[in-house]
Image (cartoon, rainbow, N blue to C red; front, side, top):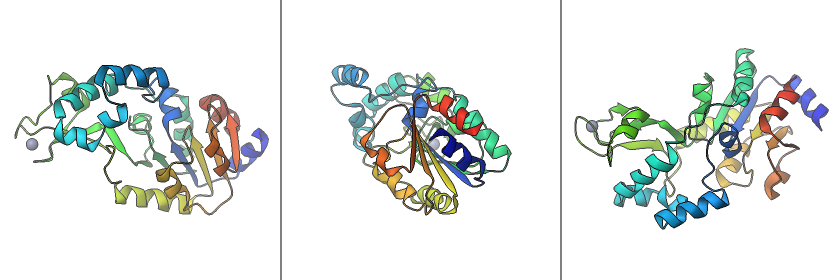
Amino acid sequence: MLDTIKSILKESNRIVFITGLGTITESGGRDLWDSSLFYALEKEYHMSPEELLSAGEYSSRKERFYKFYKKEVISYLPKPSETFSLIKKLEDEGRLEAVLSFNIFGLEKIAGIKRTVELDGSVYDNYCPKCYKKFDINYLLESPGIPVCDTCKKALRPNIRLLGERVDNDLYTMGCVACTNADTVVVLGCDLGGGKIQYVTGHYKGCNLILLANEEHYSDKYADYVLYGNISDNLKNVLE
Ligand SMILES: [Zn+2]
């Protein structure tokens, strides 16, 4: 399997990467859905992380939303693992079609990858919904309680897709176009059964859908090739 993937990648010149949760955890980030953390958070906030990061929570209970968001989400910012420097190298060689990111921690941009589509937004982009002034993440972290615009005092909005919100059509169209153009699609640490990922990968017409994942999942059957184990190590091996 490793040698087959290796030779596919060697001959690929329009590679699309799709990055998910597995790339966040290997970059030192937290998995809010990991069972022990999930239950600890549910116990403390009396709601699941999903509900706490929902559009309903943001619009009607901003104080609790921001308490959770600041303390449990943006206080644990991952730093890009070696995976991202390997992708950057492919971009420098002109062989990267795009990275479609399902991680909201801006790991691709921090690693300097230009052809990045942040499908669900980024915690580094925050704005005032009234005047559209932009605010960095430190402004949020340093604001006591609900962070507000320093001009119009309106509560700020992190530019990430919250549960219950529609996807950004423009970004998803870019994702679909990238998959249409791709000769190879490499999925890193993502559940291939999810509706959003199926929507974009559904536009890929080739037969080199490669999955690198930490562990097995029933949805791995959607991939043409699968490698299990540490994502960075495996990516390094197949790109050698
Ligand atoms: Zn404003």
